[in-house]
Length: 534
Ligand code: F6P
Image (cartoon, rainbow, N blue to C red; front, side, top):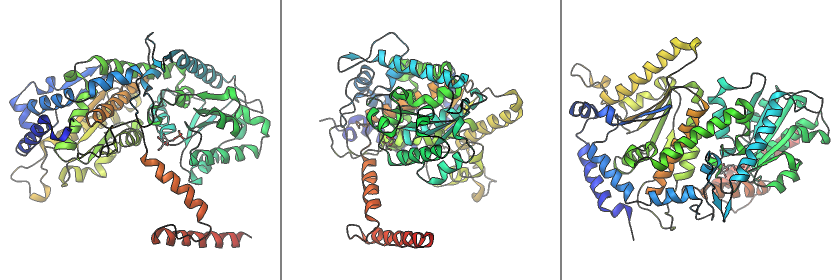
C-alpha cells in the first residue's frame, strides 16, 4: 500500500526542508544568474515567474519525483477521458469537456456528450443575443436593462468574478447584478434600484434545492408580481439547473431552463450555462474566447512535460510550502482592481476541493492538504496586512497577479500599480536586514512569491488563468490522493440549518446548552417583534 508520507521521496523532501533554514532566495540568483530565465514559463498571453520561490533545483527535482510517483498522470488522463474520478458521488469530472474546442468526442456512459454541450452553447447564444439586441422584450414591451443572477457558491462566484473582471467588455446598456446571501439586505439593495418591466432574473442553482437561492428567487418573484401578473413571469425568469422538474415547479417555462450536467462540479461550472450572465455581459463571442483560453491551458496541462507545466509547477511549489515548510495559508493578491473577486472565487475552488482529510479509499490521511486561501487587491493590501507578511512570524506564500496593458486613460495609475507590485515581490524576497536598520524596522525577507503577468485582461487570458488554478488544485489533490470533487462537509451545516429553523419556535433539549441558549434568545426576540407588529 503506497503511503505518501512514508515514501522515500517524501522523506527526502523532509531532509531538504531542514536545509532550507539557511538558504536565501536572493542568494540563489547570485549562484545562478539564469534563474529567472530557467524558472519562468509563458503560455500565449500568460507569463509565470516562479523564480522568487524558496526552492532549489534539488528541491524541484524531488517534487517532480513526488509527482511522478503519484496517481497524477493516470488521474489526469482519467479526468479528460470522462472516467469516474469523483468516486464518492460516482461521477465523472468533465468541466474540461465544456470548453473542448476540438472535434474529439467525450463520452459519458458510452455516449458522446459533445453534441449536447454544443446544443447548450447554441441555446446560450440565441438567448444572450436576443437580450443584448433588445429583441427579448419584457411584459410591457420594453427591452431588458438589468439582469439579476440569483445563486450562491459555484452558481455565483465564478460568473460574478468573470463579469467583474471583464467589465471593460460589457454591454453598455445592460447591467448584471448578483444576489447570493440569504441576508435580505442583499436582494433588497439590488432590487431597490430596478424596475420589474426591464429586469430579467436568472435562478442559478445546480440542484435547485439550495435554501438561500430558493428564498431569494421567491422573494424576487414576489417583488416582480407586485407590478406584474403570473403570466409575465416567463418573460422575466429563466433558470440554470440540472433539476428541470424543480425549475418548472417554481414556474419557469421548460424552454427557459438552461441545463447542465451532474458531471460538472459547482465550483467548476462557469464554463457551462452557469456562465449565462457572462455571455449576457460580454456577448457570446466573448464567452467563447473565455472557453478558448481555458482550452489552451487544458492542452498545455495535458501535453507539456511536468517540468514545463504551469499548473504542475504551481501545485508542487504549493505542496513544498504546505507539507514541508509549514505554510497554512496561501495569499492571492491581484494588482488589478478588476480581479478583486478572484480571491473569493479561488477560496471555493481550492478549499471546497482540497479541504479534505480522508483519501480516495476513505482512509484518514496523516499529512496536510488544502491550504487556507485568502487575499485582497494590491495596492490596498499594502495598507492593511502587508505588515504581517513583511515582519510577522508567519510563513505565507503569495501569488501576485497583474495585467501589463491598461486603459490609456489610466496609464499613470497602472504604472504605479505595476511598479508597486514589482517592488513588493522584491521586498518580500530581499527584506531589509542592514546593520543600521533597528530591529523593529528590520524585515527578514526570504518570503516567496509567484508572479503571474497577463498581457491584458482579455476573456482569453482570464480563461487561461482560471483553468491554471483549476488544474493546480487538481494536481495537488491527485498527489495527496484525495477526492477534489465532492463536498460532503457542507451537507451537515445545511441539514442542521433546516432542523434548527424548524425547532427554534419551541425549546428543545436536542442541542448543546450554547445553541439552546441562543435559540431561546432568538425565540424571545421573534416573540417580541411579532407582538409589537400585531
Ligand atoms: O457549498 C456547497 C455547494 O453545493 C457548492 O458546491 C455549490 O456551488 C453551492 O453549494 C450551490 O449549489 P447549487 O448550485 O446547487 O445551488
